[in-house]
Length: 432
Image (cartoon, rainbow, N blue to C red):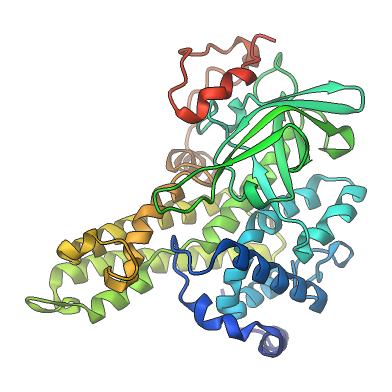
């Protein structure tokens, strides 16, 4: 593989740099450059305002959703050109976080599965930042088994009536639309009774409750559906085809999420280079060097794995299950690095406040945010199953309920084990 720019790519890179130099919100550079994973450096209203302004400017200039067709608000660029843009956007990419789900997951799902009318109605607005989307998949009763979800959609004429609960929905509190996977048939095996919809998040019967996280932020939400009515025109694909459509979303999710997650290694290396211990510079300590060497090898492995994905994309292939590797390794590495950095800080490691903690509490923020990384976009266990079965070709896990009608699958216990499941009884329709 040759990762040097071709003449055409070099010209494209010059064009990107020139446009960014003339149009980027340079007054925000210092603030954006201080952003750290798990730390808020700007209040949410200001961040949303600046994010939408930057996205709108990119869209007008023809730099939004580069690889989407021009008819849907994109540029018709190649995957490699999209990567060049991402490399050159630099700190201003921090303003794209609120659009990650809409552009990185929901948009590609619409492109692949929605009708022409649906695509023309929504994709340009996603590209311009006018519409922010979220992904309504996870449920408290489903755990890591997405196909076990129990939110129901029952058809009444030209509408569907939705009841149930979603959880860990990123950005639902500021989203305009959500991609909804719901159960429309309880009498067939669990993978066959699902249908995909999209919903206006302001629809009566939808209630969003932000979840307070360890780090004080509220990125995730519970979303309750109580008799919410969705027009059949907002169904994506055929009734019962939801599982196959959701795979498009999930493959893009692991690419989009894994692509923006930090390992923390560059920051850890810089921290150790500056740190002085009682025995001298930390970077000269053999034990510390051994830890850094291990993370450096993983960092390099992730880089080459990413290059392999880029090569596949440049050849016109869709994101594959191998993208689960990056997300699995990155989330574990960040957690290990955060733990180790705090141990090197000694007693100072217990301080969290940016004003008092070492390195403005960067690694403390990593530690408090990192458990979420090991759940969002697929738990470690699910990712290992995907890698084992779909990348390595190992025998599949035994799944005794795979061919069983959903309403005949035994349900264990009657009391909810998680506070978030307190209202899950309203969606217990397996006997229906």
